[in-house]
Image 1 (spheres, rainbow, N blue to C red):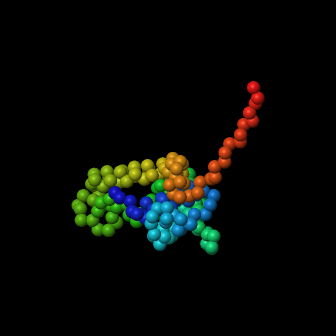
Image 2: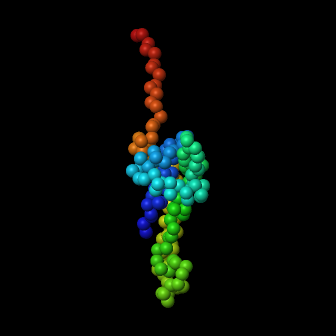
Image 3: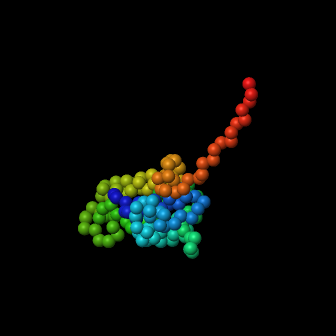
Length: 159
């Protein structure tokens, strides 16, 4: 099974927003960080917004942000919104199937178990897990990190 580019970049949008926590993320900035077109990202935003995985703020200073903590958005949440089909074989399709074993096939059972295991693993990882495990993510994405504040100097004692 191979996930689509739409799913890949949907996760990346969410990661960018999580790394840019507390600020609105703008599509041109996200597009530049990942080297992808703004139009493509706008297309991906629609299903994410409809599913409540991002919220958009319109206007001159608008952008996108996560409507809830990144720890509450799983990879499974994203995949189920962005993937059209999880049909791994003909027998997964709702239409006509030519195979005489469709109702009693071991392959169908094995593939369903594999797909459910895949979903279970995706449910164990949040967007926060992907971001917090990479301390340099803000730098890599071109997001301005918090300014460095030097520790206060300790007074020197005379000996």
